[in-house]
Amino acid sequence: MTRPTDPPPPVLPDWVVSAWLNTPAPITLDSLRGRVVLLHTFQMLCPGCVAYGLPQAERVCQAFPASELAVVGLHTVFEHHAVMTVEALRAFIHEYRWSFPIGVDAPGTPGGPSRTMTRYGLRGTPSSLVLDRQGRVRLHHFGRMDDLVLGALLGRLISIPDGPEDGDETSAVHAPHVACSEATVCETAGCRTEAGAW
Image (cartoon, rainbow, N blue to C red; front, top):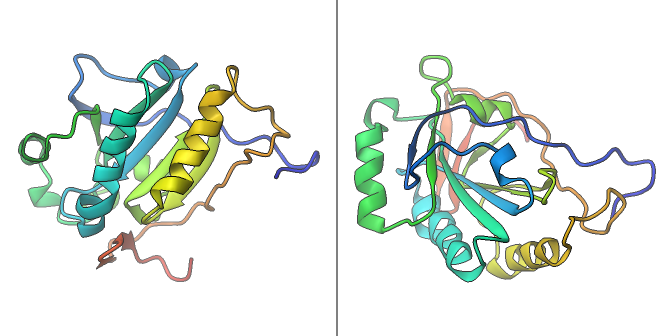
């Protein structure tokens, strides 16, 4: 629960996307205001993303009405840059039948993490960010997340027509910004950048 002295949850700056798939037009955060947003960030070669994160995002997409909740995928690259092409991603999306819009995070420095990944302080993939109807960050999570925990938060945010107030018990969970490096560690639950202690 937030305390009266806590700062309001942050509003994300817009993502930096070089291409969109599964949508006829580019999507901005402003265009999603008024709906709860699940932003799922992933890499197509991340075992945890393929096994847990992307299937969870698809289940959320199927379970909640699009008029109340938007699911958006963001392909963030911080390793294996040469094979993480838009055409490879297009084939990956087709083979797995992901139905939600997916943006391709714009490249950052050569060999480094992508731009939105750095901008949002993401530690690796899979990562999930949940925004309330005003675009405020209510969850910033790295790794595997239990379906019931995520569903409870989404249901709570959807049930509030104008979104929670700043002092509401649906407080923001925000991981601190982490400087990313080129080294990565991949485990069953996900892949992360190695930037020392978290």
